[in-house]
Length: 175
Figure 1 (spheres, one colour):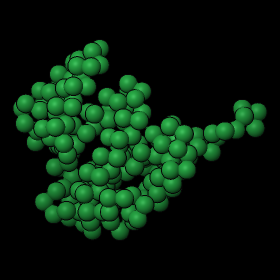
Figure 2 (figure 1 turned 180 degrees about the horizontal axis):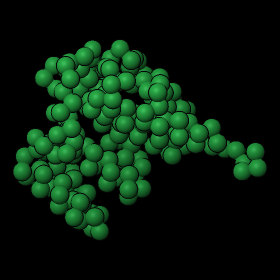
Figure 3 (figure 1 turned 120 degrees about the vertical axis):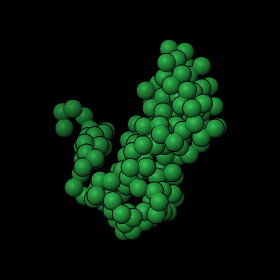
Figure 4 (figure 1 turned 90 degrees about the horizontal axis):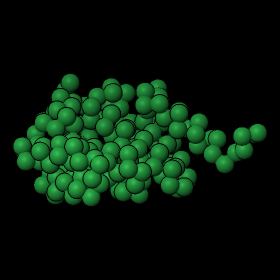
């Protein structure tokens, strides 16, 4: 895929696909991420390993995703939200979009292409919306979900599922 609007030249879908799988990481950082996964039962050790990986490769997608998953599956949603913000910042930088998601428009990337870079951005935005909703920040979550729906009008990332959850929040089961 060639560089489209908002896609940094030299950074294509294959690069991010590989990055998300850990390619481009030093052997030392790969070992840290792997050791953290193997240390799941020892939360303190796993977190320390991921922190060291983040210190050595702070902007690498594989490290960001590993940290996000760690916090998310540990139900440490405030920490997961911070990493989701880091993912959004990385994704925005990669597609050369504003760091603040609010002014991002379909013209910043070919979101409909479902290419890896725009898809990473959309997934990060979806995670951001979901975590805000779970943490009770319903207004922020709804705004992020509105933006996701604007950037993904064909609902390839199933933002409509979150919309359904948001629409049902606060209603009694009898409603």
